[in-house]
Image 1 (cartoon, rainbow, N blue to C red):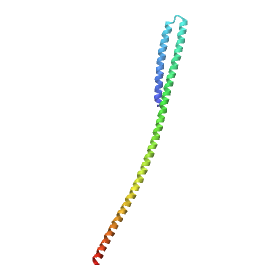
Image 2 (cartoon, rainbow, N blue to C red):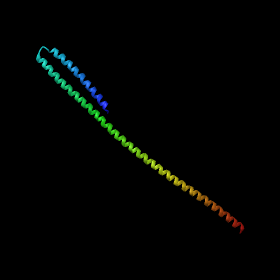
Image 3 (cartoon, rainbow, N blue to C red):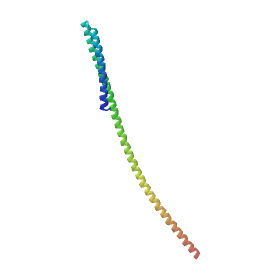
Length: 145
């Protein structure tokens, strides 16, 4: 995940925590006003507010920590995926190079075979001419004799 996404997540969690903190503050202020008659009640409200604020801070920290862990996990997975993709690209290039080399070797071999076939065809044509010439000589000798 990008830094921008991490920042956005942190901001969202911060705003959420701030809203909850404001709500808790309003509740505490209303409780303080209602309990203004006695100092013991006021002290109790303050301690409860402090405790709930500490609990809220802990929740926010845990939530942020979970979000950071999740983002880090995604970042690690993204890195692994990128490495696998690079390895796959290298393998593909290697295979393409191998196929190109094999195709070139096959083309050379085909050229050699075609040259041999041409030479063999020429030799066959020469032998046919020789056989034809020998037959003519035999016919001439046979007719003359």
